[in-house]
Amino acid sequence: MREKRLAFLKERKKTISSDLYNYELAEIENEYAFTLYNYVNDGIRQSKSYFESVQIRANLLVPCYYFACFEKFRYEFLQTERNNNNALDFLINNYSGKILEYLITNYIAWSVKNDIYITPKLSSVVKEYIHDTYYLSCIKFFEYIAQINNKNLPDSILNETHLIEYKTNRKITLKEFFAEQTNELCYIDFWASWCSGCRWVIREAKEGKDILKNKQMQLVFFSIDADEQKWRKAVEDDEIGDYPNYLIVDGNKSPLCKYINLKPIPHYILVSKEGKLIQAQATRIEELH
Figure 1 (cartoon, rainbow, N blue to C red):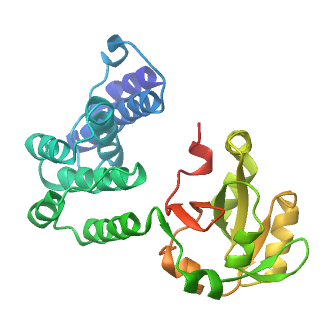
Figure 2 (cartoon, helix red, strand yellow):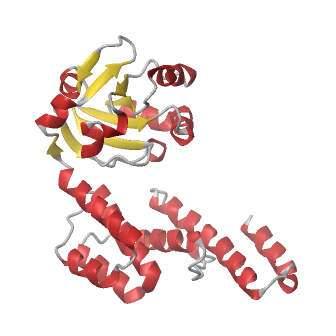
Figure 3 (cartoon, rainbow, N blue to C red):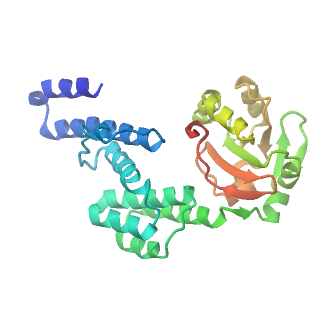
């Protein structure tokens, strides 16, 4: 596919502007690089020759340029190096400007997701190199997630978050929900009937569901729907009624959703049956291996 796209672009080089040509070339090469590095980072081993044809082309207008740079950083540095200071120094010494801001932000997100200790040096690095307000807000979010990971949910959250059970129509507290769990871990999927992306994942992520089952993790669906009937219909239509399904009273304004800073969905958390929040931003179900 890459070769065909490059050949097609070469044929039309004289008929388009140099800016458009360079953009399209960067898009093709960076999509290819992202795909290859991402494939290896998912645990598939390859020889060094696997990357011989990879060329990452700098173009700040091409989204895949950012994605490819981070996947390359993951492969070449994060596979073996878990020292925050070394990772930050590596990024600072090899990148600058917008791409550096993106990479530092995503490195922080990766560190939080993988329970890597965030070095105190981070605050000075962020202050010096991160200026984009969007990235600053993302970093603030990830720092908060790091603070609540691996801690028990507060009693106020457990007692004041209310759920409606799909099968029985019971109204229970989050504390009562955990008291009824038999599996050691609960993998909770936050979704809604109006979220097409959520519902696509629910229908298609069979492998992820099987992995959770094999690891003896209980898959639970928490809906933030405002309309109970639409929630019930979606559960029926998507054929997930055999799983534990609950409607969160007050949706994303509920104590639990506010506590985990729930914004985009689907969103996943990993919690012990005792109510310890293992991961406030767990791996997406379709990405489980």
